[in-house]
Image 1 (tube, one colour):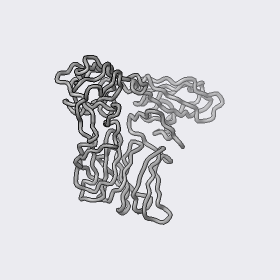
Image 2: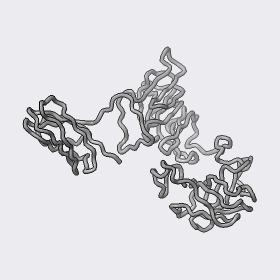
Image 3: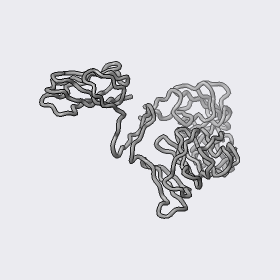
Image 4: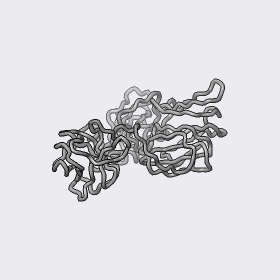
Length: 358
């Protein structure tokens, strides 16, 4: 399996989740390994990562040709000083399984070597990088493929973003407050500040465009975290109100076409966007849910709805009392659905909800 921070190439999301992608086994010689991943790559690009089993112990300064691309990179390790040096004879044991990360087109790092220091021990060895601007950077969070940092000083540019932690771009915060902490959760970056008037919180769906929010109190908010559907912030000022929370107790609007992987627990009510109509008979409701009406002795109603396809799942129930009426079937079609019922004694109402499964 290889990636550059997220599932790429031809690897499927379903395959990764099912762990059908394990490792690729090398061929070639002890100084000139070859690797044939599926799917193949077309160029050596920094950040590509492969899970590899080495079929033979390493010789001196081996290379790894991937997908038969010319000018293969040298396999390297990280020494005790943090420098990248060529793999030596025997550094890679027979049948050793490790991640191989392309540092550049010329070097590929073998991680998890016996007795070696590598990037797999991230957090031990550090490398200086250049920030987007000279600020007092206070906090950094990662989410949606992006690192986002906040600062407590400077005119503009109190936010910076990076896809890899190396190259940073200055961004404009919602206000020039002393932003002390940032967290990511529920598809949202949230930051809190030490100062400001009525605007000590800001939010962003992408880390780039920010919106001011009102904090529970104008305290000196210095810490923020996210967990179990809830943002929790703490302050170093205030009387009896030095903690504030924001989360899922109320309504939650998921982003369009959002796929919640791994399951999601929802506590409380689920509210669908809907329309209740007084129209009796055929009607147009382009919403996820709604209420329609069938006249006395009626047995069906056609609802035009642009969210519905022939593959949609539409559920309907009678929402008014009737001696005989009940739903017998709901038939979806492209752009509409039909609720079929046993003939109602009097005019009756029916509620529906539309689900589209990906």
